[in-house]
Image 1 (cartoon, rainbow, N blue to C red):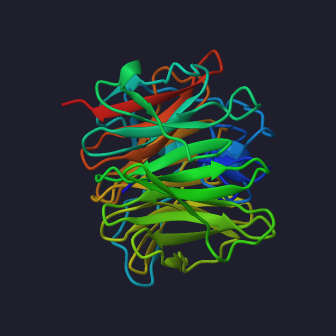
Image 2 (image 1 turned 45 degrees about the vertical axis):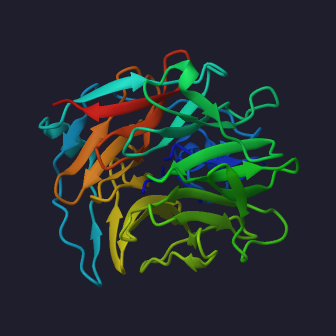
Image 3 (image 1 turned 90 degrees about the vertical axis):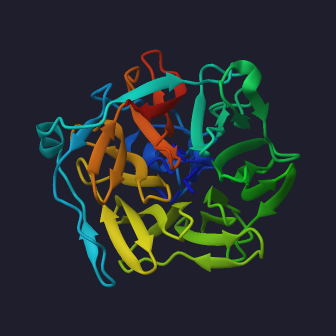
Length: 382
């Protein structure tokens, strides 16, 4: 359903995830892509192509300047056109376009952190009933490992529940569907990254068979209600390769784009099979939406680093981009409504939107003035 978020893939944005070595992934990876592309260490492990993290134990957070806008900014630029079989629609918009239009939905924001580590939290996925997954701990050292969790409404400390792969050194829970099946990745004592699926308290480790024996790096970043998950693995050169994984049959399939790409990270999947993600070509990272062979490129801000991190069944897409001034912003995009910039009002150094549900609720994280990374839940005001 969503990257169910994000961050923090391949070597780009917030590759929203957790790479315990020195790649890019989600906890440490999920944001790795982002961290690498914009020096914003948000929290997933960075490998050479991950979803949204920073390399565990090796990356230092460098906050990105952010122009905050508590209500969100709707950037009216080039209108997205319907995707056709051979089309590669570029939804690029520059920063001047983003500031020119102020027609936008208003959002309410709520910070939600696990008190187990108030200095670092990321919210990455959310169900239609409001159950949220994520993790706490920056992974910067042994005292702050990535530890996964779920949290339910009303989101008090008593509503948090730990979720960690058995025997893991670090875990990031990145995606959840409406059947409460979760996906993410875990790190062993040697720093290898493995995807996982959890259903009803039973965990299954997942590694794409094309993954090199040395330098194991797999992450699952999203899952739909039919149990089809998406993620990526890194090859021997560190390039990311996106794939789908059917959690019921165990079948893998590559996510292949109709454009040249040095790395590809799949981050979210809708129930109809539409996939979100991002790819890198010549050190430029762009988001994408791929629907039954129809491809759409997403590139916002300065046009050098856009990552699509989650998608819902209405094909609304969330993620992050870096503007021309080097500031990182979250975004909400759809083919009908275009781009809406999302900045948490408490953010001082960057906002990332990593997941969303079909009710329009968004989850992600931001860096505050004290340098702490905080999770947030946002919803449209009526």
